[in-house]
Length: 350
Ligand code: COI
Image (cartoon, rainbow, N blue to C red; front, side):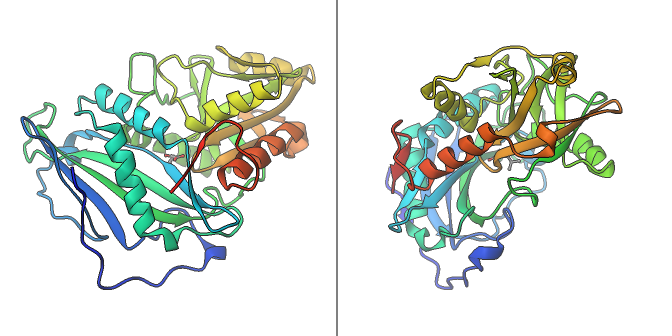
């Protein structure tokens, strides 16, 4: 399929790179492609960024049949534009599609679409420390009917946003509220899919945590630890680095997988297994909880400075960023931005 390109006649003024928020400003162009049952995906096009016209009966509005991805493009010191493991996001998008009864995309073609769009808007990729061009591919169900069933038509879109740090705290450690009233996902549910509805379901606990003065929540399933905020989570206990295993209720994060591979390449003991909140508190009491951090595309590495579990408050590494978290952050962002060598073959130049 050929991607039709309609360039904007009114390019926007680019924002100040040193004061970028997260996802508030969008570039000049966006990608759109339609799907109809029996016809497949058709009419891939890049058009000026702007509103799309839809009917109020659009099934996505009512039943939330929608999935998305989050990726970043970085500018290296020579001004080249780099993507980080983009094929992993395309693979995961199809896993999400399958879970949400949505049609698969052609992963190679959609990656080409991302590259074509980012190339067209490459002047929007910021170069300042801690910034990137956030790439948001997403798919929505577009049947204008209220019957509850998988839609027979969809739109795949990609929008781009120059971003700074996701959390205002940047990479400073954040205190976390351990959520025991609400759950994000359980095995058999949609937790492993990047389904928009998962994020809507998480908002009430996030709001509650913020009301109590915390920045994020740690999600549990029973006593088992799942994720922190919208990120995967790692704990360093007595020298061993533990992250909850992918049991179907946890998002298989690309940053999570990259951190595991980095740790393995450093010959550090990293394990994916079930871990309970009791075990974490017992380790803290025994002085063995050395570090904790979240991992995600938007937030990169977010150190956890303390936990509040039903009023039991613990500090981790005296509320400071740990040595290992700092090393992972420096190495990962170094590879992503082309500042240090990429021995894994993760970086893709556009
Ligand atoms: C990401 O990390 O890319 C996400 O999709 C999380 C989102 C809440 C910003």
